[in-house]
Image (cartoon, rainbow, N blue to C red; front, side):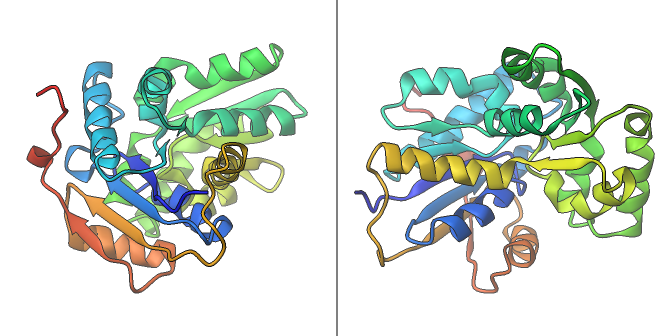
Length: 273
């Protein structure tokens, strides 16, 4: 057993979709979350930039003695997960594998849709993982950088957001898609509009809840779960606007007592520097 916290990182606010599910599923665990809002979005950035920023966030979490690192960002998962798994002395999870498994398990038409950032789409990481599971599955990918902006600016419930979602998803409606992966942790906040546009026959795959289940499994397998009735704490950090982050986080997490701490990007340095 271990009462050390679980660390989660994201390019911004989106990873809170994972944290929210993890706190519900694992009530005895403590968490530390950092969102790199100052350098968001990661999607259009080069692989080297994404790698460097992610390693800096990981270093931040490791300095706080976390017992597990969860890359709650699809873009970062695609770029750096395999490297981190081979270099860190603690378990490392990403958000792509669980979503891929659920999509392959669910689809009957063998047509899967993927909404993601441009970098995640370009990496073909989802396509690769699903092909390894079932070569007959066909993936139609759609880069949706506008969706990230809507969430980060707290406009994800607006009429503008609904119009953008409707226009963006029109190509997918022409396909025989019956499973749609929300391949960016920001996107579940837009799921009411996405579900309305795609219809009831299309299953939305939310990696947040699925990743939370995976966290619980890894804790159990490694005998790292906190004891029942352990004192719990959730620490949240952002490199961006703490007030805006707090406004979105409090509403989405349904927690009026969340504290959000600001950390400057200049404070994120790697040990080698």
